[in-house]
Image (cartoon, rainbow, N blue to C red; front, side, top):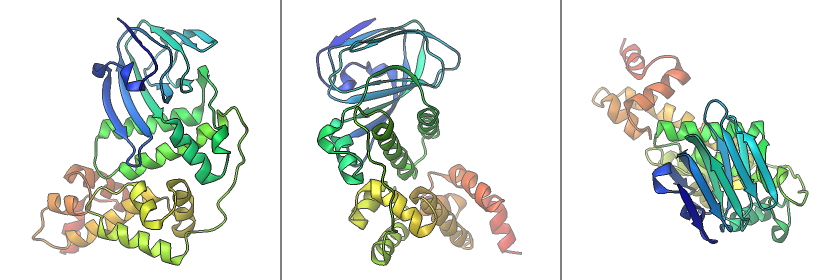
Length: 296
């Protein structure tokens, strides 16, 4: 198969039947995709977004990649990645079915991250093309995203949002044509902001909670929120939310009139098995056993 397109969206060059899952960030500008790519070729004169693809397939496959003037031909093992900056002409050819995790990023999103974190002049944000690379942190982050897609559980959007933010910062720090300034967050959130965020979490525990939601409540960027929240509470946002869901479930399990499924949904878990998995990991027993122990 051969697909060709002029400058458009990344989604225009990826056949729909390759995309197993697609999750855009609630705030926009960043999409994570899970692909199963059939053997073939792709060519483009450039797309509007930056594209980062990490290979998940076990074993090595042979691949040809051309990004601008960069060319790579050879083995493409699990964990390898390629990075194409926006508007880069490109060509790929491969002979096997490849599983990949793709990160599709609007240039304006990276510029916004640079501005919010003050790590780089937004007007100078430009990514390097990488026809073949290995990066253990990118591989780990891609594996985390893949696991989220495979589980297909609700209640984990805040975790995926956090992963996307880390990936954006990692690209700015390591794959920009200009060297960024690395600045650490010096303070926590402040009592009023923290109280507002914690109250929001408590009120919306039975619903999907995203990092963008918490950032809006705190009136700060997502990229500042995560480290400042952790400094204030000792936990990253997604860990804190999970902890509160477990505590809510403990309280509801004391009400015998509620089924364990009702407890799960009222605590923000996708279903009973989702609750059981996290509850056992956190508390050491299943929700059913916990309820029985409370009634002794």
